[in-house]
Length: 375
Image (cartoon, rainbow, N blue to C red; front, side, top):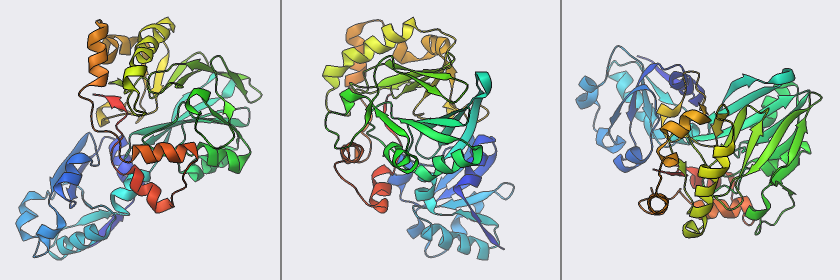
């Protein structure tokens, strides 16, 4: 039998199109339990590859013959070996090119909406990390919000769309992934914006992203308005685009709220978090569509692969927006938090411009799921 090589993009389509897939994950059990490829209709078998060195016969009865089977490991090598053994045993299987390393890096651009006056809004879904980035296009120009470090994905997409990147924003100083904002701005000549309250230790020049800032994009004069919304960080800033879309950064997610502890100041920032969620956001129109900077589980994806919900629906359904007692809210967001993101302190240092790790070092820093939310 032959073995096929699947790219992360092919697996992503299985996720987004809600298709079946059987994954044989040959990483160690702790790695699998911490982080795996999620799909609505995916099934899994986790057998560390070293348990298969003497043969794959014992697992053959556990592998389906009526659906696609893909072998996954950390970086590809072990999955190729196991896939070849399965092929020799008469099974048709595939392996994931680049392993979980490539899955962590892949971005799927999906159109969220056509905006007024001819503009478009795109969400870049990083399925393997739960990161969400955005591009607004209008009148031949573009703005990017919360770009991850794969800057070529955004610059190439802009070229495909025939738009020039003019503005690049980070809603806050990220702690779970390395920002691509500065690199994109340097490559394109765009203006790079960062909230000044998050930028007290940065060692590079930036344009302050301040409350009430209104940036026009393109000849169609589409508005991108900044809304100060601290809590995840002291500088966290949201965006209201076209009076229809609320980009919440890491303050509000579909199924949770942002954690305030990643700079070691949870007790200081918990009050800001509550003020943002229970006062500032409550003053906004409930018909706004919330577009967060992260998602936690595959269940948060819509049928088209986007992550988006109406603000009014989140006021009703999101537990983090319905904790009446302030003391209970404080306990919820400061105690019993999930583990902190992998290498988050070093990632903050990178995003401040203080250290410049190699490409491979950056990859290792970002391995694993995002953990920006209160569970």
